[in-house]
Image (cartoon, rainbow, N blue to C red; front, side, top):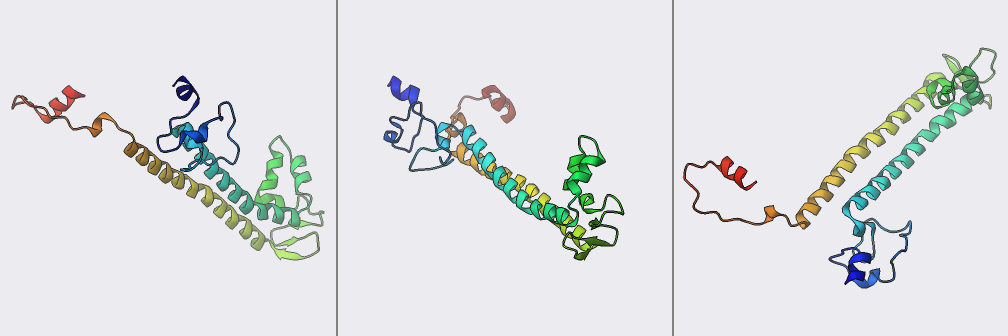
Length: 198
């Protein structure tokens, strides 16, 4: 009894034999958050399951945001190969962050052979592309990039709300029991009666 209480999680619908000889072992990176047929992170507690579900959803959102942000960086460096060096020279500890903005594709000086001016972008290959086209691609990708993050938030909210509802349905509380009360004076209000029992 002590071994079972101290070493094994409370798993009402799973066979405890799956947890034998697992004391002190770590859960692998491939452990599912929820599973009916094998050990899962949800067995360790609701909070742990929700935490790792949050990490997984945000991780996929970050991968999507990275992939959507990658073309912006490629366009910037194709249009202005000196963008990183120019950003460092432009100054300050935050100067490097300029590389991740639309302004990085513009020439730092008129003598630079590559980069964009207000009308046309000269690529390293010698091709010329209208500045408005490249800037539009970057801006629209940034809008989609931001939308991915903004859509991840309601997704997480809905998913957590459904999990909370499922947990509330599975948990037994005092509200699940009906209480019969008799002998209540007729002049007592419903609120007063509720306050008495609360």
